[in-house]
Image 1 (spheres, rainbow, N blue to C red):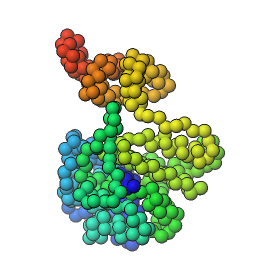
Image 2: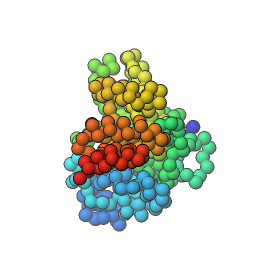
Image 3: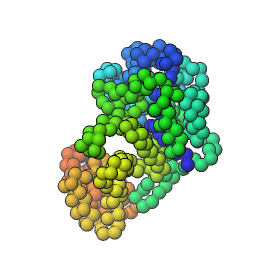
Length: 386
C-alpha cells in the first residue's frame, strides 16, 4: 500500500541537493539569490542553501499563515507563484542564529533544484533516486493521477472516521508531497549505508547536526546513551504529518535496524509506537501505545459519564498527562457538535478553571451556555472578557 509520507520527503530533497553539490551545480554556502533570480533580494542575499537544509534560515513556515489549511491549501499554485506569495515574508531571525522548522525552506529548495536542472522536481527525484534504487512504488503524489494501491486518508473524529480534507499536492511539494511503501523505504535505507547515491564524505555532511539543534539535512540525529538500551546507539529519524496521514522512519546505525510506520488514519501516536518497537528490539520493557488523551476522555464520557471522566482526567493530570488550553477548547466544541452539550459545558468549565486568564476559555464557556439558552450564565462568562 502506498501512503503519503509527508515530511519524510525532506530527506529526499536533501539528498538531491547534496547530489547537485557533488556535481558542482550548487554550493552549500551560496546565497539562494544566486539560484533564484526573482527571489526577494534582501533575504536571498543572506540565506544560504545550508540554512534552508537545517532550518536555520529564519524564513517563516507558510503553515503559520492565517486560514492556510482552510483556504490556501486547496488551491493549485505554480512553484514560482507559491514561493513569491508564501515563502518570502520577513525573516523571523538572522540566518544561522536559531532553529525553527520551516516547510517554506524546503519548498524553496525544490524551486532551486528545478532552476539549476531545468527539470521538474518530480523528474529529478525519479532520475536521481527512485529509478536507480528501484523504488517503483514511490513517487511525487498528484491527486488527479490514478495510482494503484494508494491509501485514502482519514481523520479520526470522536465518534469514528471521516474522509480527510482535500489538499492540493502542489502545496507540500519538496517539503512533503511524496508517497511510498514500507518496502521501498527499506531500499532507501539500504542505499544510505552505501555510496550508490552519494559519497561517504557527503553523506557524513548530510547527517551533521547544527549547533542549534539535533537536526541535520532532512533528518534528526539522536545519540541514545548506554543506560537507556544497554548499548550506545545512533538513531537517525524523521516524522511527517499531512491531511489524513502521518509517518515515521528511524534508522539505528549500529545494528542496521529500520523502523518505518505509515498511517492513514490521522495522527497515530508515532513516538510511543516507535519507542515501544525500539525497546522490543533491544530486549527492554515496553508499554503499549495508548489512544490520544482526548479520545480516552471521550470514551469515558460515553461509557461512565462526564463526572467520572473528569475524575480520571484529574488523576492523569497529577501524573503529568494533560491537554493544552487550545486542545481542551477544541475538544469542547467537538462534544458540542455531537450534541453532548452537558459534557461540552463541563469541559469548557474545566478549561476556565485551568486557564483563568484566558478570554478564549470564557468565550467558549459562554457559547456552551447559549447552546442551552442559559443567557444568565452566558452573560456571566462574557463579563470576564471585558
